[in-house]
Structures are given as C-alpha cells and as structure tokens.
Amino acid sequence: MFAPEKLLHMTHVAADQSARRALENFYLDVFAAQTYFEARPVEGLDRDETLIVIGELCLIPQCSTNLNSEQGKLRASYAGRFAQMAIKIPDTDSTEAHFRQHGLNPICLHPVYKKIFFMTDPKETLNIRFELCAVEMPNDVRLRPEWSANWWRDSHPLGIEKLASIATVTDDLGKATRFYKETFGLEDLGRREVPEEGVKAAAFRIGNKKPFVIEVWEPAGKGTPAADYVSKYGGGIYAINFKVKSLSKAADYLKSKGLRLVGDARRRVTIDPRDAFGVTISMVEHEI
Image 1 (cartoon, rainbow, N blue to C red):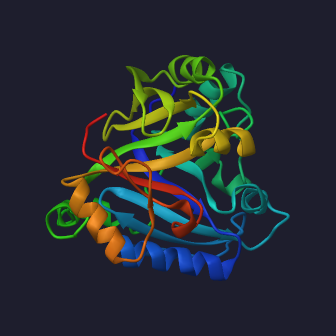
Image 2: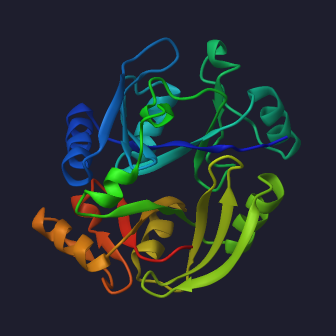
C-alpha cells in the first residue's frame, strides 16, 4: 500500500557546481535558510548537494557529478528547475508493490538502497520524479526537540507561516486528478481558479503525519508563464507557494533585496524566475 507520511524535501537542480553554490547562497541570503547537511558523491549517488530548511520546508540545491548516471540524467533534464519531491513512507517493499500494481516501474539507483528509497520515472508520474524514502534525512534539524519553524514567521521579514502548496502544471487536469486519486489515493480538496496565474486548479492533501498540499494547475489559455512551462517541458513541478503574514511586507522585503517581482502582487507576490535560478517562488496570504 501507499501510506505517505510527510514531505521530506524538494530538489532544485543546478547546471554546474558554481551555479549550485550560487543557488545555495540565494536561499541563505533571501530566506535565511538553515543548512544542516552537505552530501558528497558516494556509491550509487553521484551528486553534490546541500540540505537546507526554510521553515518546515527542506530544499536541496543539487548538481550531479556524473552526467552518465541516473542523477546525471536528472541534471541534464531539470537544470534550473525543481526536479523532484521526496516523500517519507513506512517501507519500500509495500510501496513499490503498490506502484507496480498501478503500472509504474520504480527505479532503484543502487542495490544498497533497496530498503532505503526508490524513485519514479517522471514519464509515468506527470513529469515529476517522486522519491519514496523509508528513512529520515541525515542530521535533520526538524527532528530535534528544541527546533521550531516559528522564527521564519515571527522574526524574518518575509513572515513565512507555512508551505501553502507545491504547485505542479499539466495540460490535462483530468488525467492528473485520476492519477493522484487512483494511484496515490490522495484526498481531493476540490477545484478553483487562480486568475493571477491564468490556470484552473485542483488540490490534494498528502501525508498522514504532517500533511501538505499538492496543487495541479492547468493553463486556461496561452501566453501565461504556466502555459509556456507546459509547452516547453510538458509539465512538472512549477512553483512553491509560501503562506505569509503580509503580502505587502513580503514584497517590500524582496524588493529591498534587489529582486524583481512578477504577476499581480495584490493576490500573490512572485519572485521573477530570472532572479530565482529558473524557478517560481511565490508568497500568498490565503490557505488552500
């Protein structure tokens, strides 16, 4: 069975090592991200990466060190984008069996990781690579009894309260809805329109210990950033949306950092992807 517990992390892929370090510094400078682990290449994992947290969200700036490896393929396909989200599961055996029953073909990077984690083929999972992991992240500060995400809400100028959602895009909202309901067995939170993004959206709750929200956006027409993303990449992880206390204060802070903002700031404050290493990071005031 598939029994997702919580979001472990998201991966932001860089084109090379200098870009990876610059990406890490962006998160440290703008969001006061907290670094808690630096991973270097080991058997079966050909990558350099840094595990950082912004509130409850863990992000991993990553760059493969071997273009011929599975993670090298990830670098070639996803440089400058969010590539995958890792989800904590109780064990790999039952989850893998569930996925195979639903026609998916899980990928194990190396036999040594058989009981630890596996990944999905993005071609089978809406152009998103999901990592299903049976263990916690090494040295994860979020597991420490004294740790709290409240500092980002109460002390940082952005006033981040929580991760509002992870937004994905697709050209077929119906197909994506069936996938999340039938294959993943997620709770359907309903439909809405997001006029500032020019999309129709469905939302799903995932995680039985620390739930989070995956949104699926389908462009309502052409000529929007979301539509352009679907046209270029076929879909995938499009944006992370943070809930903040005040949009106007968040906008003022981001401008003070020299960052350009795009879209309707009355509804959503979005860092221009050109200033965010290719990805869309938005602030909203509403719950999904």
